[in-house]
Image (cartoon, rainbow, N blue to C red; front, side, top):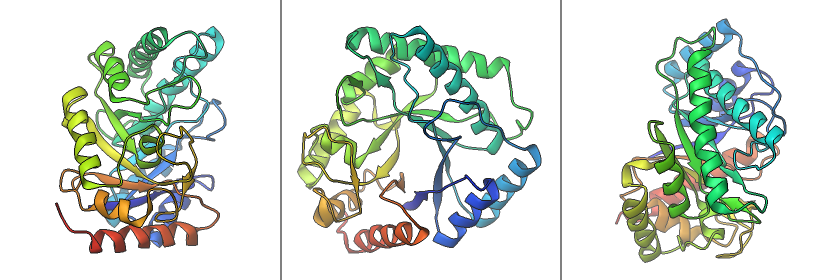
Amino acid sequence: MKFGAHVNRAGGLMSALDAARALGCDTIQMFSRSPRSLRAGSVNEEEARLFREGLAAAGIGPLVIHAPYLLNLASPRKETYEASRDALAHDIMLAKAVGAEMLVFHPGSHLGSGEEAGIARIAAAIVDACEIACHRPPAANEAGDGPRLLLEMVSGAGTEIGKTFEEQRDIMDRARGVPLGICLDTCHVFAAGYEVRTMEGISRVLDEVEATVGADSLALVHANDSVGDLGSHLDRHANIGEGRIGEAGFRAILGCSRLAHLPFILETPHRTLDDDARNLAALRRISAEAVTW
């Protein structure tokens, strides 16, 4: 099992690399730009090369890029929709430039226009973003064919799309030709109503994954405890073992052999590197204690 954390790249790519090394991460995630903005970011070609080489030398991977929270590919508002589509295209290019294997994003909220219309817009935006990115490759594109795009499971607050595996499947079916997968956020899926605190619950969840999007679609786990209870639709992350999932729940999750091949990346409350270090230590301890099943 690979464990890592979401690292801050505000000080530059090499600062993010230094944080990953200090934490002893096996894998990392970072934002492509400010998480609260759709303004285009940039990557220095030489810095990107050194960053890729540094990750490889440290044995850190996969590298995951997280798109900004403001992205809303389901929006019925033309300006928001087009800005979100273009931002996703830009993030695909940035991810390629830094050698990221995965790019994860929240599908979006339909804002009252209906799930079917929202799903259609998301799928169309994904296809269009990939075409835009393909036609405008980044200057630093030396890192392969680009990232796998991952739809993040969401908690289902308000008019969010992507709270069920059926909704994720419908997006994937409509966006054929794009290498889509899903990211299973433990807090989100629990808050959406999926029981993941027991072996029986996890087995049911993974059976549903296999029956809808396919087992191979599950590519990443965001490891977060939950402030809200089962089915609360509350998207508030807690430290590992300190929320409603709890240590017993994570012992069941981390003991599951069907998840053992996936990278687990923290998005727990963070003020300093020490916070991430404590949560990483908790994940590794619980994993070591867990009975494989």
